[in-house]
Length: 137
Ligand SMILES: *[C@@H]1O[C@H](CO)[C@@H](O)[C@H](O)[C@H]1NC(C)=O
Ligand SMILES: *[C@@H]1O[C@H](CO)[C@@H](O)[C@H](O)[C@H]1NC(C)=O
Image (cartoon, rainbow, N blue to C red):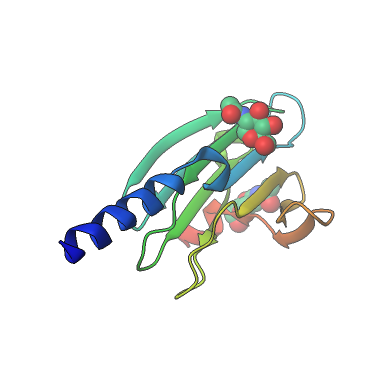
């Protein structure tokens, strides 16, 4: 009986936290020049989130709950003529033992690089683009 009670409390607790506001999110903004399409491909520890194409001023949002173990999301971005500029980066990482609720990661693709903020501060340049033809070397 006690065990069942514990189980039910746990379920109720988890249900409470499946509220949208408490989900974590990664937002990717295309802040490139007009006509410059941003190609986005993100992969989490659980899913391949597929390829998306964003026009300037469009946003791609991923929202999710931290898993009990570890949540990581890698994103790859391409832009420019023939998508010749590329960057792969860690877009989200859960805090190990700490499960986050409502954590927001904002990434802005601009001509000079990729900017990042959690939302409180102004976005800061985090990564610069790599010329894809130099990668193939
Ligand atoms: C994505 O998130 C941004 C920032 O919160 C919001 O402005 C935008 O409307 C969202 N877009 C979609 C398609 O949900
Ligand atoms: C990218 O690298 C290639 C090969 O070195 C070079 O020809 C090209 O000009 C570079 N493009 C840009 C935009 O830097």
